[in-house]
Structures are given as structure tokens and as C-alpha cells.
Image (cartoon, rainbow, N blue to C red; front, side, top):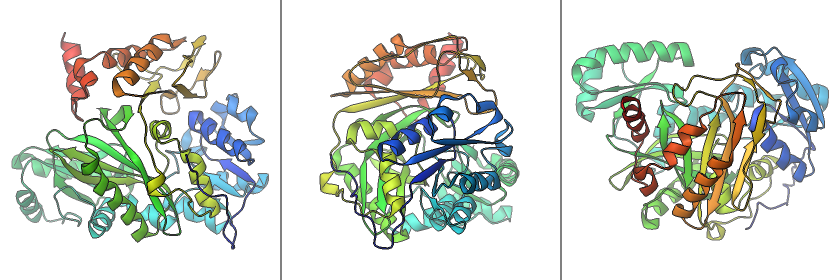
Amino acid sequence: MPEPSEQPLATGRRFDTVLIANRGEIAVRIQRTCHELGLKTVAICSEADRQAPYIKSADNFLCIGPSTAGKSYLNQDAILLAARLTGAGAIHPGYGFLSENAAFADAVERAGLIFIGPTALSIATMGDKIAAKRAMMAAGVPCVPGPDTALPDDLVSVELVALDIGYPVIVKAAGGGGGRGMRVVPKADQLHEAIALTREEARKAFGSPSLYMEKFLQHPRHIEIQIICDGHGNAVWLGHRDCSMQRRHQKVVEEAPAPGIAPEIIQPVGMACVEACRQIGYRGVGTFEFLYEDGAFYFIEMNTRLQVEHPVTEMTSGVDIVRAQIKAAEGHVLELTQDGVTCDGHSFECRINAEDPDTFLPSAGVITRLVLPQGSGIRVDTHIHAGYKVSPYYDSLIAKLIVHAPTRAKARARMCEALAGIEIEGIATNIPFLRALFEDHAFARGETDIHYLEQWLKLRRAA
């Protein structure tokens, strides 16, 4: 499989040391690729992560603050100081934390460092859901029905917008993300309350009360398209993923390719995403997220960062997406062309979380026993080990279990075997829940949508 070219730009954006501004499994993932490229790494950590294994395998490390993320992994000044003290020439933000923070990306570049990601302008444009929708409509990317403007403050005018779209509608925070800042409004008499609650939530969570409104689709699937751009007008898309298995808008299982979507349907959408990237001068990797219903795609947002679920695309495309990120940041011209992209077989990813499999409450503590599955077509991305202390301060994700096989049926069977072979003791995990889900008949047939998992869980609780 072709990879991005090694040829640097004449202007040069070379660096030999990367500070990884993240933690957990993604810190391990980035560190591995950096070392494969001959780059030195700097790990940062909070007090809670001092004993993490990736700290010891980095070329240098600094503890930058207390256990709480706000005083460590979200502390921009501390991260920039760590880069200066260790001589890092670039910062990789991973996902979450500061990865889609335009102000941080700008501060990194102004400090004379390289941000391994898109420009601050691209992050800001696509981070504002209204601006993103406007840009996508201009590029010919299909969008969910609804205006590309913020909702007015006047409630009578808001009512007219909802009537024009047609109920049910969904109200969203313009600066939202991660499944927060949104409410479904089934009927007109619930609109005012939904607007008031979502505005306040948006103001507190995202610093802006700006909202927009779209048609609420009844039975859509969540489909993603992965892109890579070099910043010189060259871009490719690496196939598609289905991320419909969600609980409270949080993804649980992802797969590539999305089942049951004909190439002639997805092809023009992928090319529209590529064209959109060219129009906004995008650099690096990114993901276009769509709702898919009745054979039609509707853009909802773009993630301007590495996705948690990037391994399923790596497994089917053969492209190291983290490597592509780094090469784009260095200024290399993308050698991979669309004709050279081939996606083979099928891949699943399960998010292994430290949480109760029935209540989904977080489970902190020490892992006393760990057995990870091995074998052909099995990959585990993790930072944990026997004796590792799972902290209560961060996201509950402790590992990603990924499988690949020639067909979806064989990949599902392989995942069932892998889930049966993984053992984690000392804390509660969601592994029993994942095992049950992969045995579900509708899931096995690929006959699910974004609401299926919530309904499935309700039936299990009632049984």
C-alpha cells in the first residue's frame, strides 16, 4: 500500500522531537509511529499518570500538573513550557483534550512549533457547526435539512424555522461536540423549553449560547469518511466506517466498511469530502460524519483530528493514519492517490471501558490480572498492564480491541473469539456487554441504526 511521500518541502518543516500532548492508549499509539519514523518523543503526564508505561518508553518526559485534566492535560501554558524545556519541535494532540482547540493550535505555531493537525483556521471553521455546514454546502456536500444560520433570539422566529423544517427537529449548540449540547423536539409545544435548556447548556459547556436547528432523522445510521490532505491541494478518502452503535451519543463499536452501502452511492460523497478539503485548504487527517437514511447522506460535522476509531480504517486500507498526520505536518506532498486507495476485508473495533457492564458507572482500581487475545487479524491498542491503576480522573477507555477478516461475518466471529479470550480482573469492564452485543441477531445481520443500542439496552433491563 503506498504511503505519503518522504520528499519534504523546500521551505522545510522538519522536526526531530514530538511532544505527545495526551495520555493512555493514544499516547502509546503516537509514540510507536514516531519511533518507527526515527523521531524522538516527549511524554507529558499528570500526577495520576506518573507510573504509566509509555512514560518510561518515551525519550523524555515531564509531569506537568495535578491529576485533574484542567490543571494538566488542558493546561496550554504548561504544555508549551514542556515543549520548550525538552526541545520538542512539534506537538501531537491525539484526540480529546486540546486536539480541536483552535487557540491552542495557534499558540503552538506562534511559539515556533509545529502543530500536528490542521491549521487553527480550519479547526475554528469546522468547529463552528454553522460555519462548517455553510462550507460543506458550498462544496456540494449533502447536509441535513435546515438553515446554515444561527437561530434568532426571537422565539416566534424560531417557531417559524421549525415549521419550515418540519417536526421532529433537533436543536444543537453551534460549538458543541461529543454528543453534548443537543435536544430532540418531537412537537411544537416542547420547542421553547428545549431552546432554553440547550442555550444554557451551550453557554456553560462551550462558552457560546449560539444554536442551530435541523431535521431530526428517525432511523439513520452514523457513517464516517476518513480523509488525508497534505496542505498542497492533494487529498484522498480512505473508505467509510459505520459508528451507529452508540449509547448516549457515545460510540461503543465501530466497523469498516459500513455494511450494505453500494460503492456507487458512497463514491460521490467521498469525492465531495475531498473537494471540500481542497476548498478550505485543509491539512492533515480528518473525518466527515454523516447520517445515512433511505439511501441518502446528510453531513452533520467534521472532526479535525485523529478519531478513536481510526484503527478500523487502518486495518482495511493498510494506511498508517498517524504516520500520514506526521508527514503532512512536516510538509510532505501526499504520494497516495485516490486510484491507489484499496480497502480490503472487514474490521471491527470494540472500546474496552473500565465501567460496570450493567450500570455503565466508571470503575477505578488496580488491574490484578490481564490476558489479551492474540492471533492473526487481532490488534489491541492499550496502555494497561497487570498492576496498572485505573484513575477515576479521566475517560474510562482502557483499551481498543480491533479485528480484521476477509468478510464481515468472519470478522464478527473473530471478534467474538477475541472477546471470549480477553481477561481483565481487579476492576469492572464492559466486556460482558460487548460479548452479548456481538451475539445479537440484528447486529449480526447489520440491520441497526443509531437508536438501536439504546432500545436493545432497554429490552435487556426489562427482561
